[in-house]
Image (tube, rainbow, N blue to C red; front, side, top):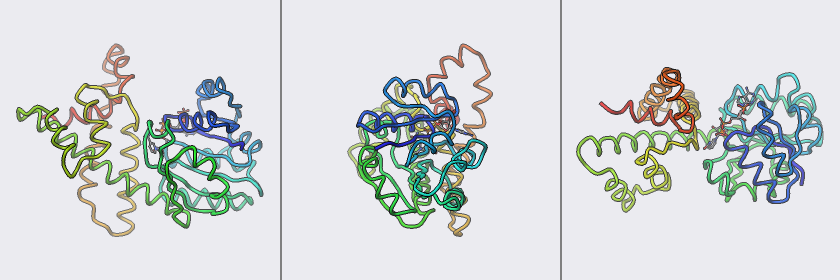
Length: 301
Ligand SMILES: NC(=O)c1ccc[n+]([C@@H]2O[C@H](COP(=O)([O-])OP(=O)(O)OC[C@H]3O[C@@H](n4cnc5c(N)ncnc54)[C@H](OP(=O)(O)O)[C@@H]3O)[C@@H](O)[C@H]2O)c1
């Protein structure tokens, strides 16, 4: 099977590499084209623009940062819309709001193309090992055609009905996850500052009813000051913001999510100042998920 892949960030690179390693022919494009080189070294072809990838492939997957990026890759010059037509399918796996997904659906289908959204639950490591949970919604026939690729990318895919439902499910999941990360960071800091051994806290949590893979994975890394990014804070804050908007639309009060969003925004606000503080510091921080680190520092009195 031949697929196109647009967006080679943390997730897109791992996912497209997985497809390549499992015998798919893949044509890749990334805004920063040099990021295609590693994939090309593993056998991928390169498209110079999104339109070129669509022209070459029957099915194209996108994995882009946010709603603005997802819309730009479809609608702008040399974008998806220039070449999409009957017989071609477009699958957007980025995390966006339902309105963005619906706009993309309308644009693609108005040119005779097929579309579904398929955001994923799972981070860098599940993307590398094909263990994502795929939340698909939209054109069912295209979804069925894409199942061989999804069998490589994920451990389970859900088909959730009409376009927008995948985006909503993803935002609800990440709204819960982001608040859990806030509570976890506060808990680790509180344990440390009140004289407890935070390693003991991790052991206690792991044996109780709130044990989960995220605490188990992130906890030891945080205690070793290892903040290498898997899910950048800017994306976590974007998801929280989009989830709060969904809450607004549906008149659902979400005080916990709102407070968590404030914490994420505050830490994101401070990152540019730290970033420019000194180039030596910057070099050290470049290798980190420093935004999450700052978030933790902000919690310290
Ligand atoms: N990382 C995770 O754990 C995780 C888990 C589940 C879902 N997600 C979602 O998956 C998506 C991708 O996440 P990621 O972690 O892979 O992000 P990332 O590493 O920041 O990569 C973002 C990608 O989007 C591209 N991009 C950004 N703005 C663009 C624009 N205006 N036009 C064209 N391309 C643009 C970037 O291109 P450049 O290389 O040129 O910057 C890059 O390829 C996001 O929606 C995120 O919320 C992430």
